[in-house]
Length: 301
Image 1 (cartoon, rainbow, N blue to C red):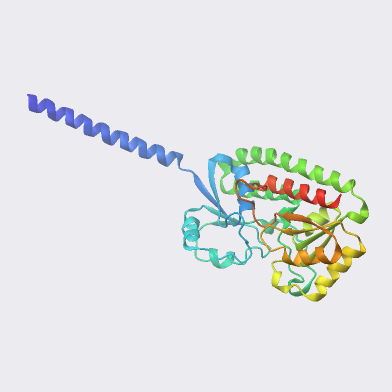
Image 2 (cartoon, one colour):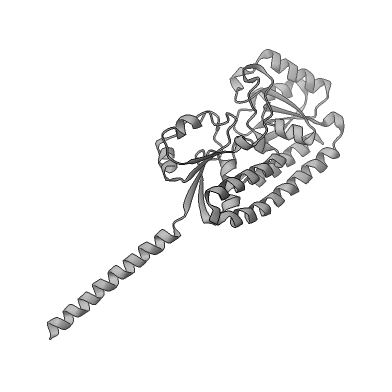
């Protein structure tokens, strides 16, 4: 009788163990979050504000990394194999993306497919679209709309969540848009020149009435010519431009030549292709836009 009792107790414990294990496995499968992979940190942050905690969002490139000529790693391929959607900018920004996605099975969302480009007018890049549309808060609002619409089509059950989060986020972007408009409206016409290293501010310049001047078009630091350098120096002198700027992911050495030749101040580094580290001044897309506005305002007033 004692043996039978012991057997029954053991049987109950085994049954309880497997029931608990199965329940735990079921709960884990129910709470497992889907994974969205973005090509660069700025885009990942925008997506993260739309999907919030219901999805995991990762960026292929890390903060501070130059995106154009990035070389994906084996770990990037592993991450991509686990994602249900890959989001990239397009307009030739990620020159590595076509090869990267060629052998992977997931949905792909390219933001540029739904944007009107500004075309580059110079040199080797003439006729190609400038990829840096997100630099303008006004275009950033379009990014949110595209992401909300596209992800809602892929995950219809989350449409209401995406739309609600998108509206909250766009309201924050609209505030920065208004601040930028107010700044430009109060800026004297002859000071509305934005002189940078890379020609990454075409959308910002067009949307807010600035004149864009740069040392090289897109990702072409090695293509600085004496003619372009002389032209920039001449313009800065002629217009008495108070400050010139560079970008956080490139060397400002060439821009310092302009500073030394013209007497203009170096206004600081603007963030374009990448967010800063977590403790930096541009650790989010909103933070990046606010930082750039602050630096430009300080330099041009």
